[in-house]
Length: 212
Image 1 (cartoon, rainbow, N blue to C red):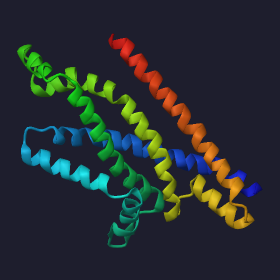
Image 2 (image 1 turned 90 degrees about the horizontal axis):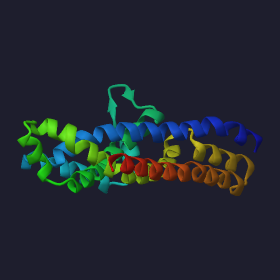
Image 3 (image 1 turned 90 degrees about the vertical axis):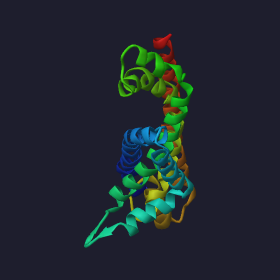
Image 4 (image 1 turned 180 degrees about the vertical axis):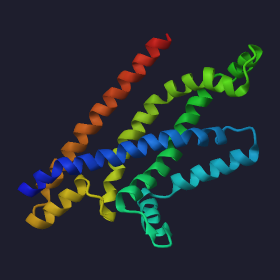
């Protein structure tokens, strides 16, 4: 059991790295997905919607397996960590794009026309007028998704990523005790996810006050 606690700091770092990297990459990649989703071009909008639905409709563990085992070019194949980050970045992009779309739909449509009357192009209107409001409204949804993402990434141990679940599984096999290692893991997930939720609410409140 001593080996388990010695391995925990590195394992926790791996858990946070996978989650945070996937969240950041997904949040950025969600922007072009949003633009495609709300495009006036029906073909582009339909294709983007189909892509998002496919990604969201497949369990995360399947995407992890697809990227890790299925993406092979010649002798190249993803190592466990990059495969996990890529899979969850893809998933995050699809989910966060829908969160962004909810924020987009909450912005009054007349603001585009008002911006056009001021001489702004639709692109400038989106960047300068709509986007700041959109992202402010999206904060609670993104934070809620971040908490879920943290927990979902616990499956990456099945492809050999040495996260905290991987460390707990090794400790269980070595000691025969399944209780203590996974109680520690549960406590760590709570210790991370609860502050994220509180921070998200604080940021959202601060943004609302700033706008008001």
